[in-house]
Length: 288
Ligand SMILES: [Zn+2]
Image (cartoon, rainbow, N blue to C red; front, side, top):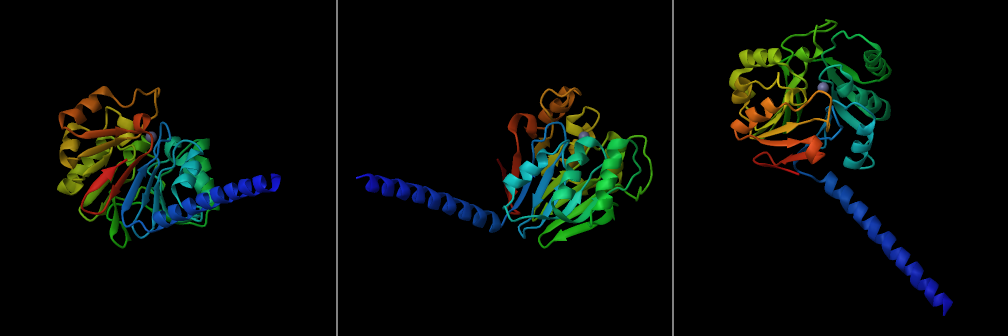
């Protein structure tokens, strides 16, 4: 009698094990076989961290958030065997953008790092420079006109307009790397912490080319960025605000939310919606 009970229990355990193994295998297959572009805006609190997964399985990570949580988010998002990241982009050397990237450089095989190469001061900035020095990644100094291509996907650098290597700006946000991602007919504009000055330069230089369906709102929804003229020029359908709940800066600003509402732009916020994933087949997109 007892042996039958044990056998039944063993069978039950075996069944559960096979069920779990089956789920894991199909999850990996589904992740591997995706034919869509996925852009995940991670909820890292007050900071930015954006992962682009191209249909060809190339990975671009733009900023890494203010702490180590990016490692958990990547671990849950990527297949377990994925230890390589093709390109890391640092928009500007402020803690809420680079701190997590230093951890990623330490844990992942990173092929290339693109950033402005500006001079920066303070102990936290040294952390970033040390992480770069220890990494074997190729360093690319950002400049408008550069294009990184993953077969059907383009990643175009729109700003800074010229190299600011070793230049010390009075405001690092002014020299945020701004990039436009294109897949088929879909465009994403990724703005870092761009300021009104950056936006004016972008509008003067790029004009109608700024038009994008999806806008990563600059500087966590600060009122001094995302001017009315800039929003009209980009003309997005969907705006993503990456912001921490109850942050001390009062982001996102009411004025900014009003500017978006006046233009009937759909808003998603990481403080309210958590991770936001925008998935596109090149013709259309949806988000979850
Ligand atoms: Zn920031």
